[in-house]
Structures are given as structure tokens and as C-alpha cells.
Length: 372
Figure 1 (cartoon, rainbow, N blue to C red):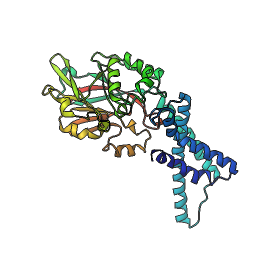
Figure 2: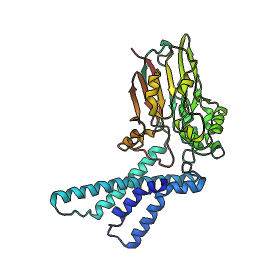
Figure 3: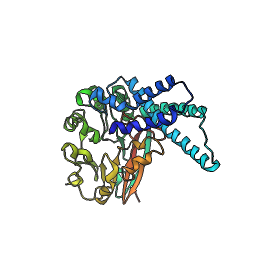
Figure 4: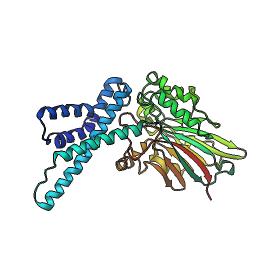
């Protein structure tokens, strides 16, 4: 069913774009074979590694597959728009409008160009995004406190050791007090990704580097990965907290596991356990990979929740689909009761759909301010 769903755009392109073209049958057949082959990118991933989430092809081939798959999706959307326009013409003029080949070819060229741009934007080392967030009850000692949020790195052959090293170097140059990583660091087993994640050992911040799992950690051996993250110098926060102090001021940093944990028999998110023993009156900064349960966190008195998971929706306009699956949260800042939720677009994204148009990746540097 998974592979059939991802094949649907290609079937529409074959029926409404390729078949009506005034071209020799051999050319249309060749196009059909290429389109169907590219549409099964995730099946080839499964055959290469045993998982649709971890392609084990050379990076250049993964880039090519993502570009082709993205072009198919974009072309399907353009063809739907052309077909709707044809229906409007039919309704108004009472006569059919035959979409000219030139217009179809132009749509195909535009889809390929946009897909190439989208893959480039998805796979580059992200730019810095500065965000200032006011928090009620923030101790004056933490006014101006700066933290860096990394999330959804999806370290793979698409985002290998060289990319990871560049992210680490850029992160260390930002002069933050704290680094948090809000899940989905990898796609692949520890044996597959050991060398690619090694540069994470170099992350540095005065108050440390703290990490929570995302849903993808559970696909590839949650316990082994969390132990390895600790060996790399990151501090796991799995339904727990730590207290950050500046003089007499305190800030609670808490983290929960992912909602998908139950599917593998691992402990699910437990905000009560995460906050047990936390000093009363200290603002709580919560790390939760998925933003969907933000209202629960707000009801428990959390001041700021940092999440990822959505990749910002990846394509402006289509991001509304991702918002529906995450209780309306997809990208940026949201007021949730007295709490602020920030959903990062992600440092990278799943290599099975590496495309960004209007939703850029980000290194998110957050400056905390005391709210009036």
C-alpha cells in the first residue's frame, strides 16, 4: 500500500501527460518506464537496505532519485491545474479545450527545474535563523540566554559525515549557551551510520548538548542509538529533566520520548515523569519531537516547547497537509495558552523526499527574553 500511494502521482502523469502527447509510441514508452522506475524510489530503498527510510545508494543517485520523484509530483500538480482549466473552458464555452503539447512540455520543464531547485535547497547546510521568544517568569539571569535548536538531521548517505561536520562547525561558531537536538538524528542502524554521526562528537556549548529521540530512532534500534548519542557527548533526556542555573536563577530543561515509542514496546512520552522533582516556579523549556501534544504541555505549565518532525511542510502550500496531521502546527511560532510552541523547519529532512520550496531548513538560534 505504501508503494502504491507513492505511485499515484506517476500514474496520473502517465495518463494525463505522457499518453496524450503527440509523440512516437517508443518515446512515450521510454518516458513511462523512466517515470514508473523513479516513482518506486522507496521500493529501491527497501531493497538496498531493508528500509524505505535509509537509501544505501551513492549520494549522486539519491539526489537524482529525489529530483525525479519531486518532478513527478510537481508535474502531477501542474497537470491537474491544466485539466481543471480545461474543464472551466468546457463549462464556459461549451466546447472542449485540447491542451497543446507546447504547454505540456513547458509544464514538464518547469517541474524538472523546480525539483532541481528544491533538492538543492533541501540538501545544503542550513542558514541561521534568529528567533527571540519572551517567556513569563524568566529569571533576569536568563534574559538574553541563547540556545541552538537542531532537529531532523536524518544523517544518511544523503546527509553524510561531510555535511554533518559542516553543521557542527557552523553550530559551534554561533556562540550559544546551550544546544538541543529534538530528534530524528539518523536513518539507518548504528553499523550503517557510525562514521556519518561521528562529527556530532564535536558539538560544544557551555551548558552542554542535550538530545531526545524522534520517531526515526525507533525504526533503527532506539536503545542502541541513545547509548551512542551519550558516547558522542550528548546528554539524553528521555522523560527526564535537568536544571540550568545562573546565580539564583533556574531554568528547567525537560525532554520526553516520542509518541511512536509504544509501537516498539519502548516507554512513551511521560511529561509527569519528565517534570517530577523540578524546582517549583522555574520556567520549563520542553523538548518534544512532535508538536501535536502542545496543548497538554501548556496545560502542565510549560513555558516553551521546541519541536520538529514536520520539516516545515517542505513545500509552501502543501504544508497544510502536514499541519492537519499535527493539530495545525507545522512551521514557526505558535501561542498555545500561556505557552509558546516553536516548530523548526528542520536542519535536514527525510532522504526519501528531499525537496524544499518556500520552507527552508534552518539552524535555529533562540534568544530568551523576560516577558512583561
